[in-house]
Image 1 (cartoon, one colour):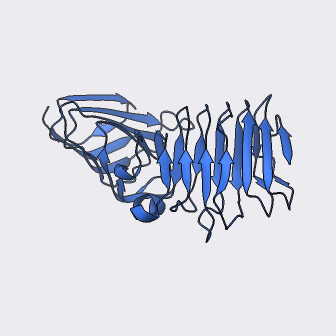
Image 2 (cartoon, rainbow, N blue to C red; image 1 turned 30 degrees about the vertical axis):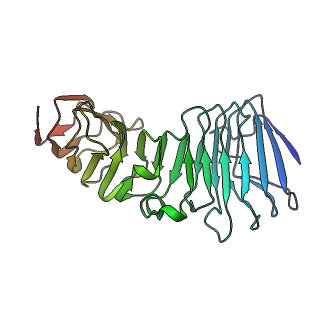
Length: 288
């Protein structure tokens, strides 16, 4: 079945609801003209989706039902930005391989990212979104394939350890919810960015994989919405350059403030701090 889409979205940018065509195995989706957003394109026997065209497309849900082979979502010829949530990727015997195109694509495998699941982002700056549990409790022999992905987004409260050895090519780790406990990002490349919404008083450690002479960390603590927000100890012991940025929540500009309990940056020779005028650094230890 071919679905030709253009300008299907509510005035606030949200999805217009479901489009259901049960009994169809393949959706050929052409998104052109202007952007579209759906809660889900639904078929109770969907095996394959092919997305083409040039207008951004957001699917808040996409469920696949082939249990005998890997289901596919192929947007390799798509020039817009695709945002898709794989609604049942964690279901038994359901595997999905997503291929992005030229745009900045985002694939949300929060329901599960198992051995035969895959995300190849293609061109653009592409995001793989996982829950903290899926991202940190990795068994390499039963974990999906990551290719051409620049951003790893953690969609639930961050804690425990994200090991970037499992995410080749990732240069940014984004905690889009908050931190819920002591959090470690380890085995990073020489240049890494970590973005945190609401540090919630928790400790954060960032550790480079191979210690070089010009390692750099960009740390962005963002969407500070209230006065008195805090971090625990932020440790980045082997980065020669640390760029620290703190920014307001755009909905509450001028309200937030942040206290950083301590910066442990023993090897740092250059520290650059920019952003929120109300932030307060309580204690810094390093090689400055």
